Length: 257
Image (tube, rainbow, N blue to C red; front, side):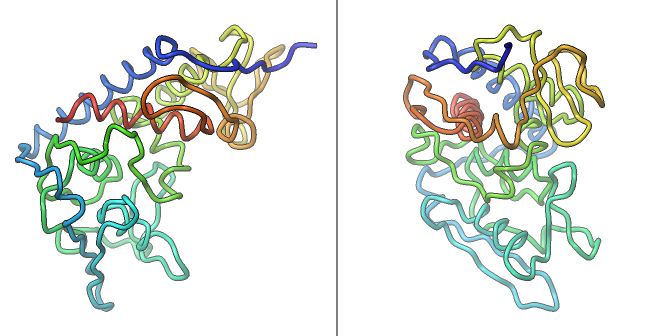
């Protein structure tokens, strides 16, 4: 009986096309940022020193520092969109919005030093107010372990826009399916990726029902948590979800310095 068959491992050559896609996507995102805000100089140690403030009256301002390699900008996002009484949330498109519907401005979310190149991209993609953007590479970036809040990590819309030039929708979902192809022994035309109820993604289209005769791989329960091995610095054995985030981090790594 036909079934989904995972590859035992991927070589650096196998993962290369995925990284190339991420490199192109991040370059497009950086170009969009630079059309609005010129990049400034980044000091490689800045991530450890930077402080991000969330000022959301009537509550007093909250200041966040880098914690366990998670940069202050992302610590602030985690605190503001999680916990018992979050003031913000990720909407259906993977953007940070306020629960009360108010706009989040530069006086509400700001960092006292220039952002590293990774934070620059993430803040832009999350549609938070961007401070001083850079194409800077933080210390230890080669490990491909830039931590983000769990709700950001698990958000398919954020991940797919990062591999598709910050453009979402069907094209971004197809880009994700195309990347998952590399990890399977199955021919790409044999299967579709299911992303939630009524969303079935092939290499060419997104449909509301699974095409007849196609294998279905569920993203949340089967694909994302499946453990894969990829040869190369910073990769190794991880879940598919973590591996694809590492592809994104490698895409940023190749566009910063």
